[in-house]
Length: 388
View: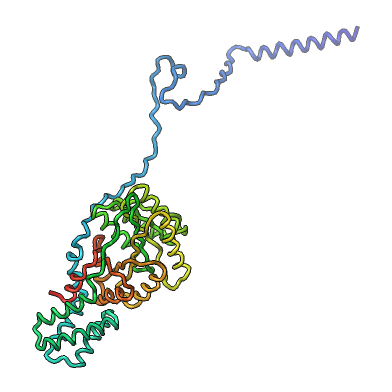
């Protein structure tokens, strides 16, 4: 009986506690808990949101994404260079400023009433100082002595005529100074430009391209000086200015490979001339000189090398002669490009280098402007030495 009563008491207590909890939960004045919001859907990337998101008929659009501005690449304007014909005549005044001192000195000496041994020694010294060379100087002095004896008295015009004749004979106007840049059927002519560091080789290559394009030819440049990235950049700038493509390779790459690719591109594009600029080489470095021979041989697998131009700095004088002789032993030099001829009184290098190598001076640099490379004209050169 007592157990039954205990159960009834427990049930009653539980019922009372449940009734109290319900009363507290639903008592008057209690606010309902706020509804839980579902998570918002992410904004769609389309320019127009769907109507289901904003209500029927919604027309709201998103602005298009802002794209970063692309850098503007300004291509250099392609220039139209003047033709090569007559350039040396136009640049004669620059040549006269540097060479006329030699001419005036010789004319003054030869115009003296009495030409004794001392005067002839002075004439000889003037010519040697101008880098004419010892052997050509002695030949010229002997010729002058003989002709002066035959003439006897000499007017200024006769003296000038004698000197002009002898200088012109030493410069040798009969040498073939033609630049061989005529294409062979579908194959372009190839010009290989060689020389030591600092002679203006890359600049001469760029100026030559301008000159040929001014004469109506299409040109491809080969930047085979892979030892200096600056040389390839410089050559490419020269090419861009006149609309010539430049083939280049990785810095430190194989120069022969670049020369080969440039020749192949010239054949593919059916250009007239491919000009290959090689690395400046010290003529005492046997390995580099051998590499130059390799460049020439690799080019000849695709086309004929029509010109090998040795670039010499006229201001180096007889040192330039030694350079020329070593290069001539490695590659078959066909012509000389003599730079900075307007900046030296030693124009006799024209005579001595031709005599030693047996190849003509074909081009001369007479200034720093882009069109200051000119085909060499012996008569203009001699007249500039003697003055008006």
